Length: 193
Ligand SMILES: Cc1cc2nc3c(=O)[nH]c(=O)nc-3n(C[C@H](O)[C@H](O)[C@H](O)COP(=O)(O)OP(=O)(O)OC[C@H]3O[C@@H](n4cnc5c(N)ncnc54)[C@H](O)[C@@H]3O)c2cc1C
Image 1: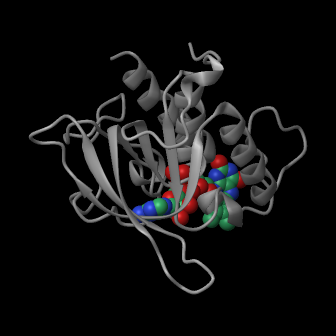
Image 2: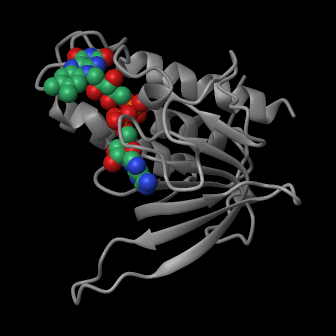
Image 3: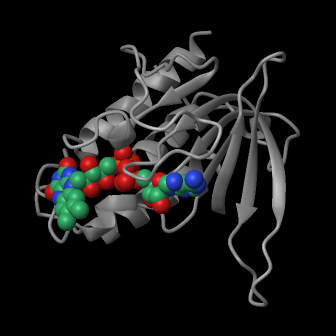
């Protein structure tokens, strides 16, 4: 069960994040929401726009709780607000490399910020206890083997501390609700550790 965390559990720039999420489609947003509500420090990264592939959906009729169809842009905006109000931090930019944890227990990733008005990008090294790949149909960042990663029922990959959720886990058959369910599975595994 995910409950509300104490308000001071969410530093905005810790040296070590509990959960780093690559991609803010429905899968990444759901994982960010559940992890933040569970008390984790969460950094959600997005190279384009929150909502991912869902933003192209003109009418979503199979989202529980919506009697009238909702369009993907409106649902994406709701998810963005909900994730932020839960305490997750959202940064626009691209995770361009991932280093696997050995010999430490920390996953390291390189984050290139969205370009400033003058075109410059800032490159930052990020450290996290857990990394969740929610990159949809985009190939994973360098450092992660190409292709679909094998995962178990909790969305754990064979790579230590790295999970894969949503369309990058089940290419070709993903739905918004299944991507969100993957986010829940991965976070429940992380919170149970
Ligand atoms: C036209 C259309 C209509 C649809 N209608 C429905 C519908 O009615 N109901 C339904 O359930 N599903 C629908 N879908 C499917 C649904 O959109 C997908 O199942 C869902 O978006 C998958 O979510 P995801 O989070 O797994 O991946 P995505 O939505 O693909 O999100 C991945 C995100 O990761 C980001 N990303 C990738 N690489 C990086 C990186 N290195 N660094 C930072 N960010 C990165 C991408 O920019 C993207 O925002 C529709 C899809 C389309 C195209």
